[in-house]
Image (cartoon, rainbow over the protein chains, first blue to last red):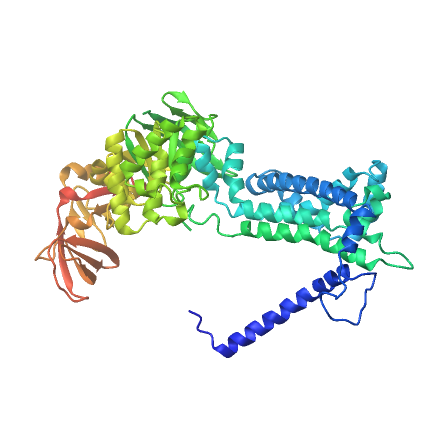
Length: 277
Length: 356
């Protein structure tokens, strides 16, 4: 039973609607630009769907540009970064949560310290390192940087989540007949799925939307990832806004879909009922 | 079934010495209860038997084999945890089947064993539920079920009933006892509740500060506690203690601020030797008398249970409790004349606390 007064409800919903409009309007504008003929960024019409709308920009993306190739590059890099992130963060987070070893506190702290530097500040040293390792213009170089920037946060949040899972669960598994590793992947890992989802999403975002590092490391058209590729539509004299907008919409679809799909795993309280709390 | 033997087990956590030279033999099929206040080392002892902690020194033997370096899964033991430790992402059936699957039992055998255990514990209709859909008592049954399906040689229980309400605790106590009678498997049970210890154990091991104070059958421990600690720990309400010093050598008379009493001649020599002694009298061994000898006390609070009464008394600064069968209605501050049977009195050294 909702006991709130109608006036209060109206106010709450008005504010919510305002924020929805606030968030959706820019996206709708981008959609409008993407289906508007020509490269008109600004237009007097406020119509979301212009009268002369068409999908030319979308078709051009795939037929006249290397968009598909860039998408393939981005998907490859992102998948590798997500897998690396999930595998490394889930195992190292477990070690940092469960084992006591010399240097444990120091390594946790040093992971945290890396988060204090803005990515742009690290750009030059990272570039120098990659260049000495002959990893410029390779996906491996990009993957190493993406993984290493995403990992500290992922490790910390995995560790934090493992800390909330009672020790007795894996102790019970070990007495039941599981080895330490079996107890980890059969009991602890399934229970940590909300944290794994966050790790996966974070790694995904770190790789899928990153521009600055990719723009420095990848020099050739055919190596570009989607964000770098999109930027090629922007030139000094003329920007192909229609293509730009269409590309932006396509780039955002996987991210939005993934969020919608994974949110159902982001449920807390999965450990509810296992132990007396 | 198997016997368990702890030989000179020591345990350090960093610099802290938790267990001191623990020697204990638990016989095949025996139900042994480790009991003591928190921090006494009882759970650590159990976890060393389980393999969840390593002993710093000493030997742990199960069925004659040294187990110190053996993984928990290879010790042929099962454990019931205080917080149940059920796997939350599995239903009851899978929780119980988990250990069997790891041991590569075939599905038919698993089904037979789980059904058998579920029937024994009355949880057959819960098999498809997740732990979060169960009440505390049901979860506890599942935890016991998960232990028994494997038919291990030794069962370990780590305060399994302490999260249950009083009524359920009494019920589960009986059920675990019945289970032991039926399975006849060696069981080691840890609790801080002396009532659980007294009612369940074939033998009780009282621990304090990492030492075994006494290992005895419940009745022997109750009637002949090895020292003042055990005497005070076993029995509810606790035993009352009074300081007395031997006076008038040869006169066999003990004197204290609250009372004077004569000890039987066979004890007098030992009492004289100690000089300072403490007498322990259980609450039920006091009698309300008509005369002032040996002493009088003032009533502070009385608790009337119907079938018996607890009187909380004060005699010259000594606070103590007595249990009497009749319901005497007295107002606080009234004098109560007390007597007790010298045969039922326990004498402890004033210096070491050991039984005289």
